[in-house]
Length: 366
Ligand SMILES: Cc1cc2nc3c(=O)[nH]c(=O)nc-3n(C[C@H](O)[C@H](O)[C@H](O)COP(=O)(O)OP(=O)(O)OC[C@H]3O[C@@H](n4cnc5c(N)ncnc54)[C@H](O)[C@@H]3O)c2cc1C
Image (cartoon, rainbow, N blue to C red):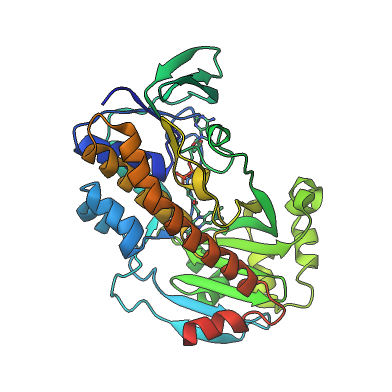
C-alpha cells in the first residue's frame, strides 16, 4: 500500500489508523487541533456491542476498553416536565451498552498508534487522476497521497470531492452545561438524575443528562428554536433559557439555574438520511463526514468507530487494490449508516413530540 492520509483524529479516524497499524500498514493522521488536550472531549458514550465494541475488538483494544467502563452508567431514567418518574431502570450489570468517557476512549486510541500530526488543518484537496489527490494545508503547503480518507466530522473538507450534500439544521439546539461535585454541591439534582442516563421531556423541549465518573452531572438542555438562536445572547443566558421552562417543575429548572460555568449552545445538524456517493477513485469518508446524524439514537461515535475498523480491514484484505477495498467498505457502510440515520431522525421526532415522553416510554415498554 502506498501513502494513506486520514484527515481528522476523532474516534473514527483514530480507529482506522489503529486497525491499519495492527495489520502493519502505516497511515498519516492530520488533525487541526494543536494538541490532544486542545479541546475538552467531555461527555459519556455508550459503546454498542455490534459497532463500537466490535471496532475495539478489531483494534485489539477491547480488554483495555473494559477497564475504562463507568460502573452504574447503564442506568436509565425517564421523567415528564412535572419531574414525575415514568421509567427507572438500574444498571443491571449485563455490560451490553457500557458507558465510557469520550476523552478516555480517545486517549486509548491515541496511545496505540504512531504520533498524529497535530495543528495540521486541511483546507481542501483535488484529484490528480489515477485515484491520487493533492491535499492542501492551511500553512500554504501541499502534498500528494494515494488514498485520502475524510474522517473530519460534520463540516468535512473532503466530502465535496464525493458529494454535494451539506448538513441541514434539525430544528433542535442543545445547551450544554455542567453541575460539578453533584453529590456534595447539588444533592437534589444528583438524586434526580441518578447514576446513569436521564431524560426529562415535554412538548418540543427537555433535558438529557448523565453522571460522569468524576461525580459531575453533564446536562444537555434541548430546545426547538431557530437555526441562528445559538448566536444570540439568549443562548448563553440562564435567565433566557429558564424562560423556556417557566411551567416546568422547579427541580428540573434547577439543572439550569445551578449550572457551574458557561452555557454552551450547539445547534444539531444532520446529513440527509441515506446519504451516499458514487465510487470515486482514491477517496472515501467515514463517521460524521459520511453520515452526520442527530445524537438521538446514540449511534454517531459507535458508527464512526465501526466505519474506521471496517475500512482498515478492507484495506488490509485488498493489498495493492485501493478500489476493491473502498468498494467493499462502502457496500456495507451505506446500508448501515442509512438505518442508523433513520433511527436517529425517528429518535429526535419521538423525544420532541407533542406528547413526549410518551413515545420514548412506549419504545422502552416494547
Ligand atoms: C451533544 C452530542 C452528544 C452525542 N452523544 C453521542 C452518544 O451518546 N453516542 C454516540 O455514539 N455518539 C454521540 N454523538 C455523536 C458523536 O459525537 C459523533 O458522531 C462522533 O464524534 C463522530 O466521530 P468522527 O470521528 O466521525 O468525527 P469527530 O469526532 O467530529 O472528529 C473529527 C476530527 O476531525 C478534525 N478536523 C475537522 N476538520 C479538519 C480539517 N479541516 N483538518 C484537519 N482536521 C480536521 C476535528 O478537529 C476532529 O478532531 C453525540 C454528538 C453530540 C453533538
